[in-house]
Amino acid sequence: MMWKNIAGFSKAAAAARTHGSRRCFSTAIPGPCIVHKRGADILHDPWFNKDTGFPLTERDRLGIRGLLPPRVMTCEQQYDRFIESFRSLERNTAGQPENVVSLAKWRILNRLHDRNETLYYRVLIDNIKDFAPIIYTPTVGLVCQNYSGLYRRPRGMYFSAKDKGEMMSMIYNWPAQQVDMIVITDGSRILGLGDLGVQGIGIPIGKLDMYVAAAGINPQRVLPIMLDVGTNNEKLLQNDLYLGVRQPRLEGEEYLEIIDEFMEAAFTRWPKAVVQFEDFQAKWAFETLDRYRKKFCMFNDDVQGTAGVALAGLLGTVRAQGRPLSDFVNQKIVVVGAGSAGLGVTKMAVQAVARMAGISEIDATKNFYLIDKDGLVTTERTKLDPGAVLFAKNPAEIREGASIVEVVKKVRPHVLLGLSGVGGIFNEEVLKAMRESDSCKPAIFAMSNPTLNAECTAVDAFKHAGGNIVFASGSPFENVELDNGKVGHVNQANNMYLFPGIGLGTLLSGARIVTDGMLQAASECLASYMTDEEVQKGILYPSINNIRHITAEVGAAVLRAAVTDDIAEGHGDVGPKDLGHMSKEDTVNYITRNMWFPVYSPLVHEK
Ligand SMILES: NC(=O)C1=CN([C@@H]2O[C@H](COP(=O)(O)OP(=O)(O)OC[C@H]3O[C@@H](n4cnc5c(N)ncnc54)[C@H](O)[C@@H]3O)[C@@H](O)[C@H]2O)C=CC1
Ligand SMILES: CC(=O)C(=O)O
Ligand SMILES: [Mg+2]
Image (cartoon, rainbow, N blue to C red; front, side, top):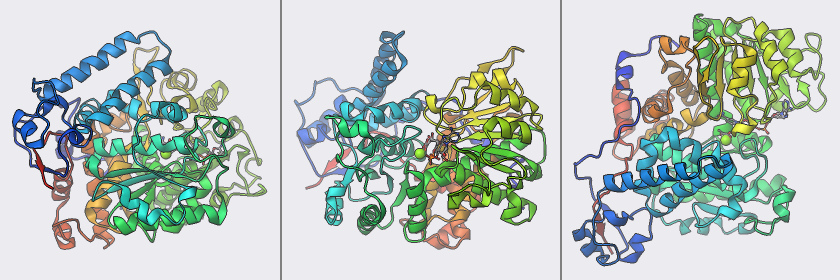
């Protein structure tokens, strides 16, 4: 039976989990790195630059002696120097408005990213809990909103509506021979911030930073892509500084032709790459997923990654209630937001109920209630979104268009889950209504990003819905001190717990598509990661400090599912038979061995 591993979290896995940062600078000499440039060009290339870290012999070999101050610093000294500047910036900006401080922190990290990627990823990996909120949600949202003004140096590639017919040659302008992971957006739905046009490039950059930090994808092999097909954001179109194509978004066939051309070009040059679609407006998220998922190695993070993370959390809430997992089939779940994320989550959760209860998907929808901007979705709805048809309720049960509070009062759900992008929509009245939930531990998931778009804050959730709730949000909040002296634990229900492992496991399996089985395995693995003790305290997801370990486990689960689905073609020297013979533990070791880790490699110049 599926989910059988969940309650019995393995002791070996628990022992392997590291807590807190593990800052250790190995003295082992890493393998060489071949470079095709010399002199000042090396210093200006963040992939190879070591700043003051170049040993003197290397300075001689690469023709950079005299181009740097004479003192040679170790990576550890450079690391300490950066952290000291960062802490000093924190002290100097104390008391200033939050946005100002966040952008200042982003700038200092971004400057390092642009200068020396090895050191950048080293500080990011070792301080992921502090830095993820800057390079990822919530600050990345602010960065996208201000991108045209913040822009200094190019990162990633831009394909615009003006490049039609040119993409097959343009793709060869990218300097790296090999690309493993591509994250692509068209900027049409950036977090909960709407259409940000070309400025949405910040999202693929942030997601790929997480790929490097969590999955150990080599930063020389990642490629952020912006497909600029115009924007319908009037403010941006009127802004003289706006860096994108100043035209309304392409629609219909014209739009699809641009994406088709990009996909053909990317897979012609890098047939083994994995492409993650990110932050496309719902209609294109579903359409492109349908169009490409059997043809290319791709997945949609908002639809599929989010679904897996949410499902893992929903199963955690059943365990938190002290109920057996089989009780998931009886949980009443209200989902607010019927877009790419909300529909993806509802679909995967319904499929899980159908499998667990051995019933049809239609029957499995009984306990799910879907609400969009027009209220509860029922069969009475005119212009019902095809993706929502399965979940539409009979209006005899609750009226068409019923509000969130009406639905919560009537249904008394176990879970209230928000993916609406609307900040504060779980207001006091809604949260208080959750006190009447049929669950002994009602769950509130305010999953929209960034922070201001969360359906409620953690403080409000515990204050109005009660101290016994389980709480999760898409962007981080601090834990809440409760009146009874206990801690209200805040979980971060974010697809960052899955997409790095989905990408890495797919890549190392050599699968040419991403199957439902692989995605389900990823979700099951995350769900089983937590111990019963943790879950009973309301801790549904692991600490982000463990993200590399989680990703190795998720990646292994994905790879093994690819083997089961008979689509694993192998990677590098490791063939499909080798993968097939690996035990679970061998697979985790194989994944871990293939994770890149930032160390200064000796640079060897080759013409
Ligand atoms: N935590 C996570 O890992 C993830 C969070 N998200 C967040 O989810 C949010 C939604 O993303 P998408 O589904 O892609 O957007 P979307 O634009 O496709 O869907 C938004 C949905 O919310 C509904 N909605 C809007 N106003 C509403 C209201 N007042 N009451 C009820 N429903 C309302 C809309 O009708 C629509 O169905 C965003 O804020 C995004 O950041 C998305 C993916 C992952
Ligand atoms: C986390 C994420 O993918 C989103 O908010 O869109
Ligand atoms: Mg997203």
